Image (cartoon, rainbow, N blue to C red; front, side):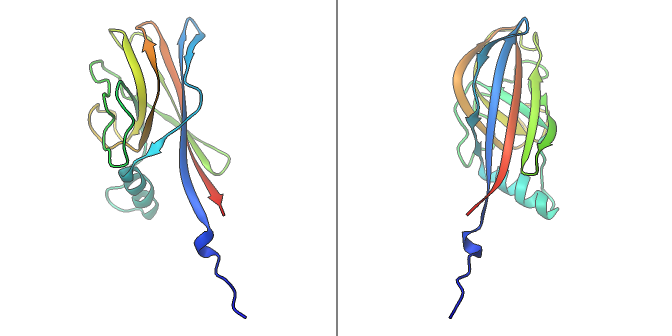
Length: 165
C-alpha cells in the first residue's frame, strides 16, 4: 500500500489588498473600499524570492505612488500614469505586521502636496522614493477619484500570505 504525497497540494499564496480614503476637513469624501491588487512578476522575484534567499538584487517596499493610468500587468515595472509633477509624490510607507501572515503598509499624501487637482485611479508599491524609478511590487486601479489640493489621501496596503490546501 502506497501513501499519496500531498506536498504538491500545499500552497502559499501572496494576495494584496488596498484601501484609499480621501479626506477633507477630517471627513471622508471618497473611499475606494478594499480592493485586490496584482503582484507583478518582478514583485514576486525581486521582493519575495530574492529577499527570502538573501540574494543580490532583492528589494523591499519603502514607498507608495498614485497615478492616473491603468492597472499594472504581470510584466509591468512601473505604474502607468504615475504622478510625478509634485515633490513628495512617492509617499514613505510605515510597515507593520498583522498576525503572522499579513504585512501592512500605511501611507499618507498630505494636503497641498499636489499643486493642481488630479483625477487619480491607480496605486502601487515601490522600493524607492524617486518618482519614475525603482521597480513596482504590486498595484491596481480603483474607481476614478477627483483629488483637490486641499485634500488628504490616507491608505493601507496589505499583502496577505495564507496556506491553502
